[in-house]
Image 1 (cartoon, one colour):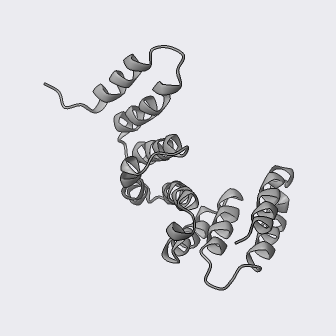
Image 2 (image 1 turned 90 degrees about the vertical axis):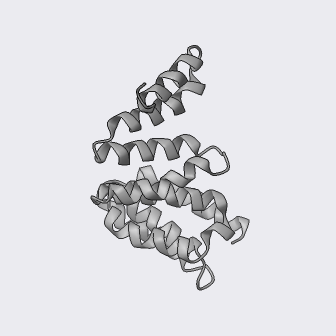
Length: 169
């Protein structure tokens, strides 16, 4: 879309925390009105609507909208939003009892081009793994993501993370 539309969407999200849960539908309406301005078939519409449903506690309503955004070509529109969609979709899948689908969706993201969402990928994937009883793998991902941010012990924590899932000798 254009910068003005993006700015208005960002402003709506900046106000999100001012909406109490009782007014969640009002927030979704704000997003809905912005989505109505988009050209038909835009992948940004279902993306923004999915985010609004998800953020107001309706992962079940968000899942098909996230999928629709990806099917409509969100990758071509915005790689960043596409990656966000995969993270959020995986989280919503986990919330709706389909953590295995979340793992399948996020695992390829571990090898994707690096960006500021790398740690979020690992955190969401760790939650999906934990939901499947694969806590050591999840902990390994979280420690690996945390290690570079530590003021000391980066190498030690990265090694510990690796050893959590390394085959035993």
